[in-house]
View 1: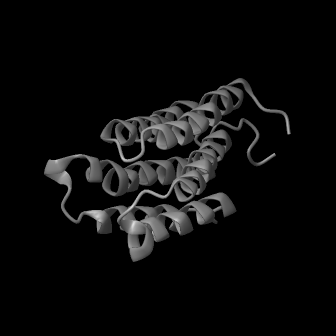
View 2: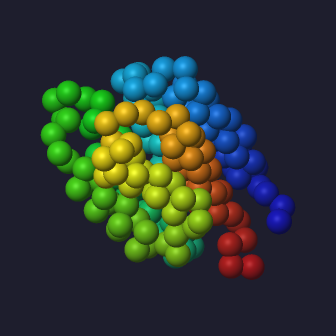
Amino acid sequence: MKVNREQNLLIRVYLPLTFVIILTDHLFPGRVAVNYFKFVVVLTLFPAALLTGKWFREQVILTFAVFLMVVGDFFLNLCSAIPDLAGDVRIFGVLSFILAYLSLLAGLLILISDIGVANNVFNPAYSSIIVPWLQNIIWGTYIPAWTLMAVNIAENRLLA
C-alpha cells in the first residue's frame, strides 16, 4: 500500500509521540503534567482526522469514532488529573468507548489497550498503583491504533 502525504505525516508525528508518552510515563509516573500531555496528543488526533478525511461514508464513521475516543479519554484520563473533575465520571468514558467500538470492527491494538485499561482501572491489584509495564501496554497500543484509524481516514483510495 502506498501512503499519501497526509498518512505519512500522521505516522511520522504520532508514532514518535507514542514513544515520548511511554518515556514520560517511566520518568514521571503519576504526574499530572504527563496526563495533560497524553490528552493533548489524543485531542490532536481528532482535528488531524477531520482535516485529512476524504468524506466517504466509512471515513466519516471512522472520524466519528476518533471523536468518541477523545471524549472517552477525557473522562478516563484527563478527569482523573483535574481535582475539580475527579469524581467518578469514568462511566461516561466507558460509554464513549463503547459507542466508538460500535462504529468500528475494533482492531487488535485497541482490544489489547483496553484490556490494559480495564486492569488499570478496575482490577484492585493495579488500580491503586502505577504499573510501568501495564502503562507501556496501554499507551504503546493506544496511540498507534488510533493513528492507524486516522491514516485510514486520510486514504484517497479507501474503496479502490
